[in-house]
Length: 316
Image (cartoon, rainbow, N blue to C red; front, side, top):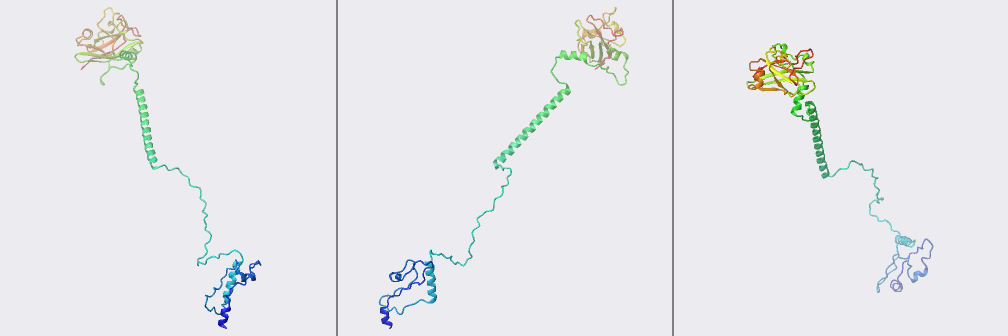
């Protein structure tokens, strides 16, 4: 039974008896004879090699038949399904690619570059220095103006104008006397003298052996003193009472001796004619009165000629 059957038996083709689930004619009886359907891709037994006894036909076990039937059913049910590969790792969830929204950027003052900060610092230093110099210049200008106002500096005047202003507008002062000395009446520059429109008050007379220098204050009724036809001084020497003042002008019948003056201070050399004639080395005092252009004395407001005073001669 074994050898004869083996030689006449043809190779048996194992075809899955499972039909498609959708009832489509995917398999027929003719397909077993003519060949496999395109959908029938299940495993089949290979024919035995020629000349060898194939032995009894091999039938698949129930487990193998079930597996083959399940594979054929899966293949015939439609497009192939790709089952996930079991790698032993838990499935990965979808990657959370969403990023949290960015809040508004905190804006602040722009940070200048390092080089610009350095230049800015130097520029600030230069500006501060310029402002300090300008403030110092302003303070100096203000101080100069204030000093000029305090000292009374202004446009320069000519020497003659200054001298005339000193003669006409300078306030009178009392003759210089010793603190313990009582001022005699002839040396006082009294208010009665100054009430006259024209008056003179001698303040100092110094004799140094070569010249005599006489300082005074005077008023000439708003005019400038001059010895050429205008109001001027008659200066003479004495002791304060002699010679009498009324003889020191041409209005007197017996005029005394004097010299005329329109400069302040009055300076005469000791060896000069004016000093030797009108004063002399023996004089203790020097006196002065206001005279007219014709060399007559100007009367005071009481009818006399007391328009000036005397001062002692201080010998240096």
